[in-house]
Image (tube, rainbow, N blue to C red):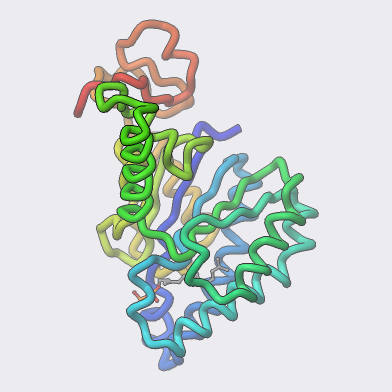
Length: 263
Ligand code: FPP
């Protein structure tokens, strides 16, 4: 298994890819869907257990309604068209983000794909749809506040771990590596809490051109970096992090100690 347990990708540059070729923007999204298939298969081959893709942000609602309709249509087409190959390749698909604003047909397709691929053990492919990290943090804060009002929790009992357990990612390790394509260097409201110690990698290629060798290059750079989580370096990212910490942490691959110091 790769020492990257969780890879997250901000798939950017579909529109520019199309515009540079004199094509309508949706052509870039269509090519982007092909890249999703290629990169998921590469993640399987590279034994990365969790791949999270940012497909539609809560801010993407500001786009023209025609582009949104096309995107949702592409998602549906992907979910229907890829179902059997996801099952064959041992890929479990799940989506996260708000569902209450999505078209019912897309919700049905998401549910059906999640149900059909539930048994996949090779890769967990997580797709963020109508996702905004600030929103999920606010929802978690509301849940904690409600428990305090009900006196089931006192404010002093609120710790980082307790708060993280209120987030939808409670059962998922934080991303080890976040890749953003198309040259922009920002996080854009993606996994803000979970990215606290993620390595960031910015690739100049637009998402439709991103392929297995680009992923391998990103992983090679990741492995050449030293993750310290605020402690002292002791190993490259070859699967073992000890950072000068007591041994119990050293055999948990790249796992952030829960009481990490800042840095
Ligand atoms: C960003 O490019 C990309 C999106 C907003 C949509 C991502 C969607 C796909 C890759 C299509 C298929 C996805 C799945 C999960 C099947 P942009 O349009 O913002 O590009 P630009 O910055 O060049 O305009």
